[in-house]
Image 1 (cartoon, protein in one colour):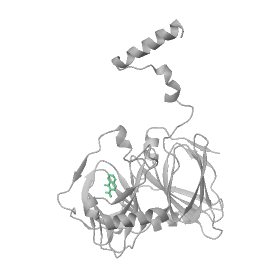
Image 2 (cartoon, rainbow, N blue to C red):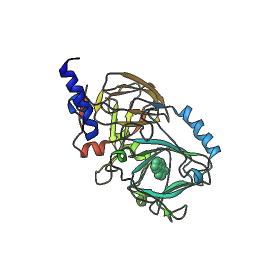
Image 3 (tube, rainbow, N blue to C red):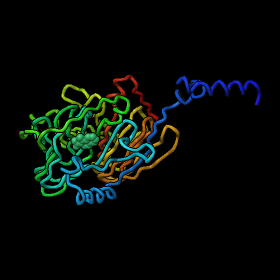
Image 4 (cartoon, rainbow, N blue to C red):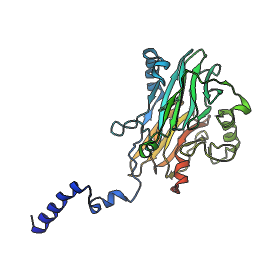
Length: 327
Ligand code: 1HN
């Protein structure tokens, strides 16, 4: 070693004790040439997850669990709450007669109903009892009391989306349990459920009305005033016409996708250039890391595919970091 290297080594060894470190060793990692999400492409085929959920139904009650959820974990290194870098998602099961007790928290949640009869399963949000049907999106805004229940005949399963990764940076997620399992509520349908429930049939009507010959329609869920579903995360729905592919697009957003209907595949090229092809069918879930090139293909020649996705668009836009490239 040269004298100069010795001097440098000696200098570096003194820094830890003063709680400082040289930027010049890590500058390029701090400001990389392209986004470098920690999440990978991951898939949760419903055929493999549903039996695990039903087993959980035998092993633990909703009351006991508080929320009987299998968290969708992106990879073992990242662990929960990361389904993608900015979004947490899980699959929740409620059985007939059960109650998931009332609580409230800073974190915002939206739910996409995957499976179940429409008669009798509900989420009560701040006194409004909202009935859930397959494909509906139901919100529990920040700090609203919410409990789930079911007088339905069969299991009820939904996909939860929460902004939990945000609270790794902003460690201010307060939570509180209500004194009783249920927060007093009254049935809220139609107008009364507005702003809390976004029925699938309304979304599909809009998608179908916009379905063009180009074969792909994407619509954001919005409140009546045009705002996103929350300030952190929101959702979108897409229709891919039978036998067609959507054009290749990348955005500074990450997504948790869920297949409402259809069969096909999504080609995802991550920022590092790795290509993954996710084969999907009805009720499957997968994630897309930020700044990945995405294209969906509907394999059926007769039936369109409908995809739902949770996105981090509100916070990325609010921070002025939204960027899109069509390839
Ligand atoms: C939560 O409150 C629900 O209310 C679901 O159903 C999942 C994951 C983490 C923290 C709170 C619910 C959750 C959650």
